[in-house]
Amino acid sequence: MKYEEYPANPGDYIDVWIKASIGSSVDYVKFELVNSFPFSVDSSEDSVREYSDYTGEVIFHYKVRVDKDAVEGTNELKIAITSSDSAASGSIYSMEVEVADAQTDFDLIIQDSTTSEISLAIANIGKNTANSMIVRIPEQDNYKITGTNGQMVGNLESGDYTIASFSLVSVGRTAGNLIVQIDYTDSIGERRSVLKEVEFNSQSSSTAGNVTSTFPNDASGNFVMNGNFPNSKNSNTKWYIITGVLVLILVGLFIYSKNPKKIKDFFKHNHNKSSKNDNSTAPEWIKKVKEKEIRK
Image (cartoon, rainbow, N blue to C red; front, side):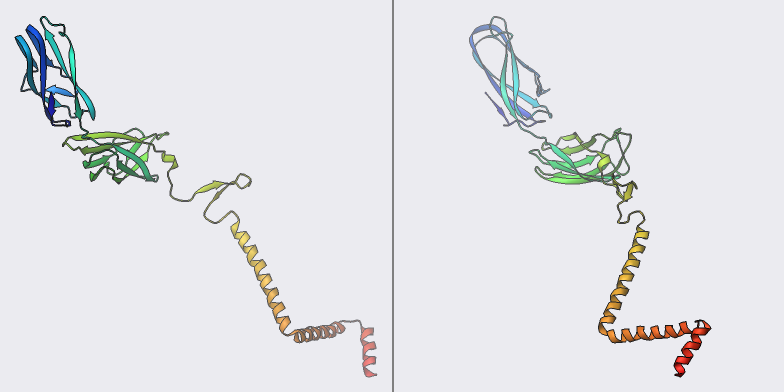
């Protein structure tokens, strides 16, 4: 006939009223609520209702417990019938009970990672708030926690997200997916634990220090990408010399353009002086010829 509360909440009890119509008189009939997940009869009452020499209809009541792990949506409450002289004997009838969703769900991605630390972005993608939420990295073969393995988040509402960071290192040759455990209290006060796997390749994480790159067409092989290449000191020295020579040439041209006459006189004077010095080292007969020319 009906049930209350509607919808049924996981971990709670519902009151169920059932009406059975008996078309003809029967010597004996038994109705039994079948304990079938997620429903079970409360321990304080009997699951069986028996009647004898009865014609007409009967209404009976059950107090039914809804399992804390009941799945959201339509679930079937089942009633078995046994009768001494009825064609319905051995039949099982079902009635639909709507169960609310008290749990929630999560989605995880790796927000950031290094060789020693990982940051996880955790989103509540379910309908309910996750209360007193704790994120943990459980023991696993491929990863080892080097710091604390758990982080308290608090309450995470539906549609919200949080960041949790951990210090860990990969062990072994292959890392594989990272297993993350999320503990929270659901909307009916039940403490729950969820395991999630997040794809994580520790080899692709960013690393500290210099990044190396290979130049395939260069015989020198690998270079450290810190702004300096092999033989950079020799190259820099050559450029310093060339730059200095060019500067001197430009300065000379600038001075010449300002005082061309003085420059010419300077070179002429040096030339005459040089000529005299050359005569002093000339042969003796040349000196005598020049002295005679001077006397004339």
